[in-house]
Image 1 (cartoon, rainbow, N blue to C red):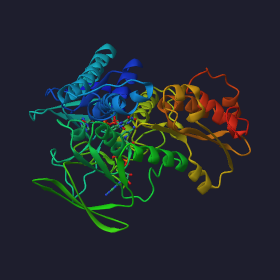
Image 2: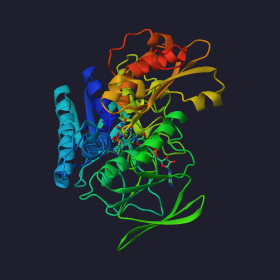
Image 3: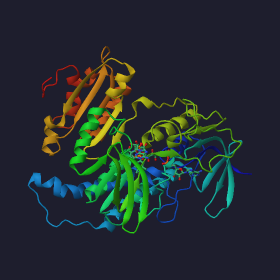
Length: 474
Ligand code: FAD
Ligand code: NAD
């Protein structure tokens, strides 16, 4: 007899492990299966996010920012440091230590919440049985009333620039360079390209980013994207828009790229090439043929508005389903599914998911951009406020960027808030709360914000929607 659970979760990324913990908290007998192997050769829970995504990238972004600031920010404070050096082994080891701390932490949380972990590849069979294949090929089957599919995503590979793990790499490779590449090529000026491109630019690489679209950060509000583009260019990120890679050939002296832009065919030689052109849902070996679970045209697991697959007791969450590929989106789906399984009222509002790009300056937004509202014909009014007029930002020598707020022209309900500048990854949270509570710009305008803080930019942007900002002309 196979061991019987109330809930089996396949995948222990931020969508799956959170679903498992919440299910266990609700008194359900829960198992979570994951196949990810860490650098030490042992199971590493936490998925892409903890192992090769959110956490290690933020660790390297922070280390590289400290290094960059020595030469580019501290002199403005009257501080100079001579002969600063980087110990690359220590730079990477610090990141690895943080990863291990957090992946190990999930194991402890599983123990504390009585979630049973399994190490191996889980395959859903008909009748909510799950076959687990261990690394040595041995198999066992467990079963449950409910199965949550949380298998995540993997990087998209370009047929003419295949990953070799050495010269042409994905995110995992670019988080583990043993030395600073003199010339780094990046395909895709999306979130990964900009974040990891920034890491290596700050460490001294010449970074060239090749982006297929003619518009920079097309999903971001155009005013914010324009400021970000200007700042990234100042930092030396060479972003080539409307450029299509044709070929990447590994030769003795580097990776030879051929791409076409408006001026015709171009060539470029780099030491390393990071391909970051998006990710796709990963469902390999996840589903037996007769389960009835469907995939859409992009390979994502088809679900309804309650993350249910339509197959009795089978649910799916995170990067493997529709919606933005973000850790916090997957985690909220994981919580909601556990609550729906337990007969409670789960809730995920895909319209108020915050987006953050952890560059310098940071970029963050929630809700609709001005171009989206225009395209949808929604009447809106707008306000903004620059960080150049925020005392705290200027005191930090980071008075760059702005907060822009969009509210409905008739009801004043906040429709979107877009920011570029210092600390906006944190400032966006206030706007998410306001939008989730269906707040108006006047609500934020009438709330007291501490002085001097960066949050005053949100306050003043809200005031500016009604043309009554205090510290700038309206
Ligand atoms: P994953 O994290 O991909 O986890 C899925 C897990 O399931 C993996 O461990 C996989 O091994 C396992 N698995 C798959 N199939 C099976 C199977 N059949 N059996 C057993 N196990 C299986 N998002 C943010 O919100 N903020 C950020 O700052 C951020 N930074 C990122 C930086 C990088 C470089 C990358 C690559 C991504 C980043 N993301 C960020 C995106 C974020 O990592 C993903 O949205 C998130 O990890 C998705 O969570 P998930 O649980 O759906 O899938
Ligand atoms: P992305 O979708 O953010 O960007 C990919 C970029 O590559 C796009 O601008 C696209 O136009 C471009 N592109 C596609 N094909 C191309 C080609 N052939 N040549 C040149 N350019 C091409 O994807 P990503 O940066 O790979 O990130 C993957 C996912 O990971 C994203 O969905 C993102 O949500 C998530 N992520 C989030 C964060 C964060 O929240 N801070 C950080 C990293 C990754």
